[in-house]
Amino acid sequence: MNTKDAEYFVRLAHIGSFTKAAKQLKIPKSTLSRRISHLEQTLGVKLIERTTREIMLTDLGRGYVTHCEQIIENVEAASNYLSQVTSAPSGRIRVSVSIDTALIYMQDIFADFILAYSDIELEVELTQRVVNLVEEGIDVAIRVRNLKDSTMIARKIGSFEMSLYASSSFYQNQSIPKHPNELIDTDCIGMGVGTPHWNFSEQGKNIELLPKHRYRVNNAKMIQAAVVKGLGVSILPKSTAQPLVKSGQLISLLDNFIGFQGEMYAVYPSRQYVPARISTFIKFLTERLAKQ
Figure 1 (cartoon, helix red, strand yellow):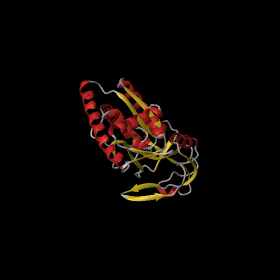
Figure 2 (cartoon, helix red, strand yellow; figure 1 turned 120 degrees about the horizontal axis):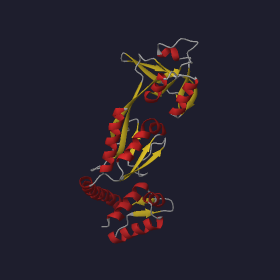
Figure 3 (cartoon, one colour; figure 1 turned 120 degrees about the vertical axis):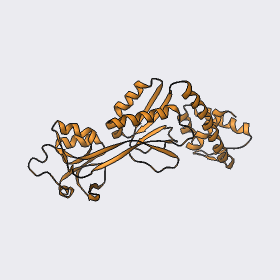
Figure 4 (cartoon, helix red, strand yellow; figure 1 turned 90 degrees about the vertical axis):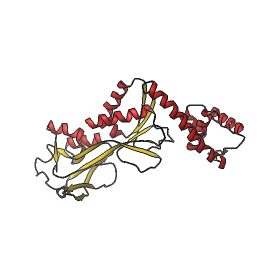
């Protein structure tokens, strides 16, 4: 069996479209169609049913794709093993990460990784979507929550803290709040659309607040700029806000209350053997985030 044809068939089966699969594989659609037809002729069975809009696997095709996945994974594991023990990590890594996470936490880390591993090519897609890693050919997605997907592995790579801030001039003519309930009538700046609650913790007791949002925007940098301008109070990452506190542009609010904490995960498809370039990348992220 030609393992390349098997790889093409598996990719086509997952995506369900010759056009999209060919684009992801970076080969002409006609070439992919010809290779699949050749595979069917070699096996003497029909693996897919073609229509004008989509393809459907036959019963034999569904069984065959499962076996192909195992074979491809074993071949990849063997190749990656040899690569790992005989040379430095190499190859391309496709990464998906949200715009805010990338700009706040990852800019320097990605650049330093490229400098440290000259044989690895890093391709980063900034998106607000939760992408389908398999369908879109993504090796690693960096996410700020652990998605419960049994087909994926989610490895914690770091944690982050957020707190409440206002500009140094915002409370010049009024008292600084001592309790979350005092924010009910305060102009606040929210992340994105809708009216999400803010949650605080005091001695293990949860305090839920529905803030009065005068301004909403789905970008952390713009929210921070609005807070500095004095438009209102908002939740900001400590890593970017604390330097502005030291410079006198911002003040931190409600420090006696436990605010907003989160964890960061590297999510990647479940497989028997993780390529050296992927494991090296995840280890690098983990070590660097621990220092921030």
